[in-house]
Amino acid sequence: MKTIISFNLTVLFLLITSCGNVKQIQQAIYSGQYDRAIDMAVEKIKKKKGKKSADPYVALLKEAYDKAVDSDINLINKLSKDPNPEKWRQIYDTYLLLDTRQDKIKPLLPLYLVKENKEVHFSFQDYTNRILDAKSHLVEHLYKKAKILLKSRNKSDIRQAYDLLDEIDRIDTGYRDVSQLMQQAHASGTTYAFVKISNETDKVIPKKLQDELLDFSSYGADNFWVEYHSKKQPDKHYDYTVDLKFKQINISPDKEREKEVIEEKEIQDGYTYQKDANGNIVKDSLGNPIKIPRMIKVRSKVHLYQQFKEAQVVADVEITDNNTGQLVDKFPLQSTYAFEHNYATYTGDKRAIRNEYLNFLKEKRIPFPTNEQMIYDAAQDIKMQFKDILNKANF
Image (tube, rainbow, N blue to C red):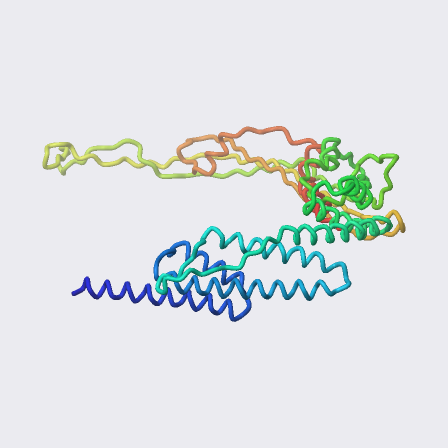
């Protein structure tokens, strides 16, 4: 009885699920989402083809396909009357959609309504010539528009020209001189920025740090339209100057702090034997002498040492428009670095010393880092902040 009930519930679940899928496809058709309806129906038919359960999906596929084709053809007819040449992009895309839609269905053919033993026919067209014609008009329009924009002195226009040429190259690779024009557009549309480092402090900035700051190849920058140079090239006009100004470098003196700590602990130091009132050793039930831990107090004097040195670097990034001479942006930067080393010595019984201090006993005094090293370490955050500014610059 339980088996029958379980089987009936399974069938009911499948029927509900199937109805739900049919309703979803119907809803997509009613809301004009024909291609979504087609995709859902195709997936169902792939699993159920040749079965009666596929019939609703075959019928819905036919309905969605016919309505989608009618909608697209009406759109093309309407666009064809528009004198604006921008229409060709949409016409071209629509013909591609018509062709792609057919290709989704062709592998499923022939399709039948199994219950009615009736084949369902789909009206397919060869759109090749119409696609080629629309493509020809589209690339010609894009080419003319790009050529006009390339004459502009405005970099945003030139970059727009590059995007149009790139679109042409994707649609029709090798079209006319598009490849050369793209190179020209990229060269003309690129912003060139000269990057320099200014030191307004009384400290020397390590050469290694300067080299790393000006090594733009290590920044991982992915800005197609911006090039940074640390050395001016005579054939380049630099639109902007990026000046990393070190304003303050503060370094504390070498400091060594000392602290004395007395450590005491009660520990076991061997054992004695339990004795009775007569001085005899007491034994357990097995005849073994009963041992009593002997506790003693141990003491140690720990000398704790801390070596400490700190550096702070303060800087500004100033971006100047070389065409107007105006400061267009300014970013304050700051970072610090602290050197800290702990070590310890002791006298007395080492067993009294807590684990925390035992680790310090393993260390020895080490040389303090040089001021140059402190500046380099402190400026690592400056380097990362500077990198982030260059990567996000919108010129």
